[in-house]
Image (cartoon, rainbow, N blue to C red; front, side, top):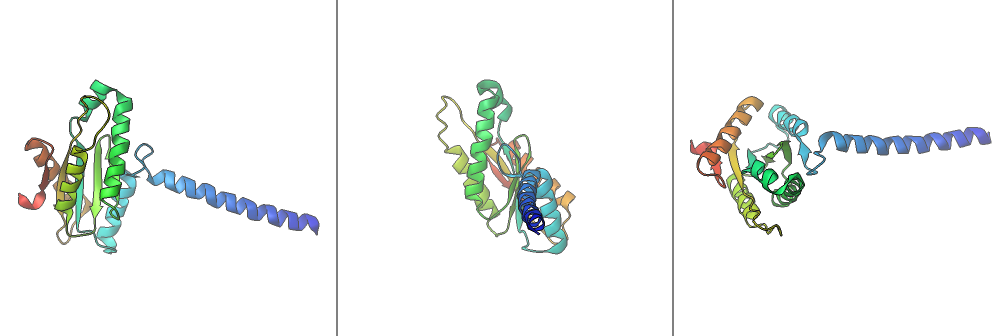
Length: 184
C-alpha cells in the first residue's frame, strides 16, 4: 500500500512539473525571445480571432518600423541593435498598456488597438522613442508608424495591406512620422 501511495504522490508531482513545462513552452511559442513581445504568429492568430469572433473588438492596428535600423547595426554593432530592440519593446509595452504588440519582423512591429485613440497612441510612441536618452554617443533612434482604423467586414490581408500602406506613407513623408490610412 505504501508503494501505491508513493507512486500516486510521484504521479501528482510529475503532473505539476508537466504543467509548468507546458506553460513555459506555450509562452516560448508566442513570444519573441529578444524583445519579450508577442511574435508574428501569435498576433496574426489574435487578429484573425478578433475578426472572426468579434470578441473584445479591435478598433485599429498600428504598424511600426524603426527608421534606418540597418544603419544602427552597421554603425554601432548588432549588440547595440539588439539593445535598441529590447528597449523599444519596453517602451511599446508601457505606452500601449492593455493593447497587444508583436515583433513581426527584424525591426517591424504590429499592435492591436482596442480604443478609439490609435493615432494619438502612435504619436505618443513616436515622441517617446524620439526622446529616449541612449547613453551611446551619436545614437539617435526614431520610428515611423502607420495607423489603420478598421472598417466593417475586414479580413487579415486587407487590414495588413492598409496598415503597411500607411507605414510606407509615413516613411515617404520623411520618416519619424505617423500616418493614418483614413487620411488617404
